[in-house]
Picture (cartoon, rainbow, N blue to C red):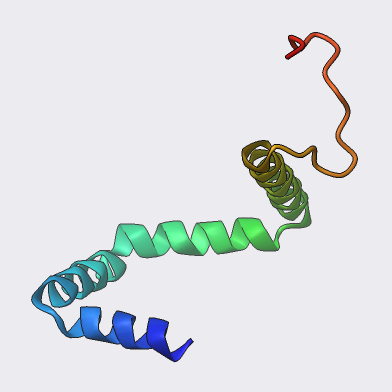
Length: 88
């Protein structure tokens, strides 16, 4: 892990990294963006929205598992074969 931190740290010290950090700080200081972040935080704390976020997270994890399995040529656990899929 130290290698990753060293690379990130080196990038932050570079000209490109300094430019990116300055840009991020400027965006973070914008009152409109601060309001958006606060609104998002409030939504995530609301149980109604939290359930939607968790559901989306589950769908994304499932999609990632399927994509990974597709690349390796295996079926993900619990996957069912599509009866309409063409036979190889």
